[in-house]
Image 1 (cartoon, rainbow, N blue to C red):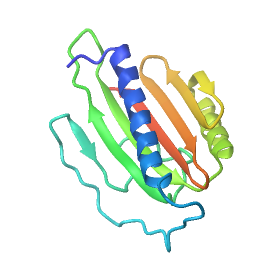
Image 2: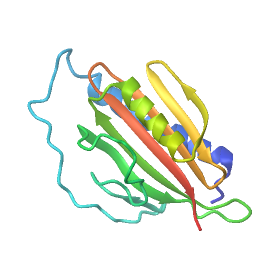
Image 3: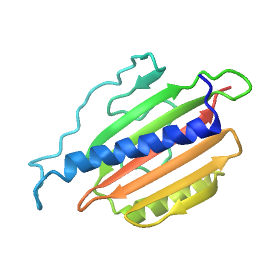
Length: 170
């Protein structure tokens, strides 16, 4: 499978659509004012099963290779996705590992976006574009070696944060 820049963008867009769909089907179907009795995070160990698409899922843990200093919610309401996928491209396209982490938080959308945007700038990323509104997106890169896509969607009381990092394999 060859993962061109166009295919990488399509994968990122697909991940965003899935995160928004999960949010809408899970949270928009609840009555107004609905709150869970308690928030419980499952204490599952990482599930390191390689599926046919070369993806490793990590349950509620941060995926392998995810920056430990990235300022994310340390106790999210729920983890939606935590995985690493290897593209195993053929030359001339470079191989990338796609590191995905998506979670639900009660943190403010603007504050979350600003903190993550500042993190990207301080860590040598060049911000390519960003959008403001009900959802916010940040696209950044460190040359061709590393790409960063952060999408944040705000609901009434909760926010969905999706972070996808594409790292060139050595």
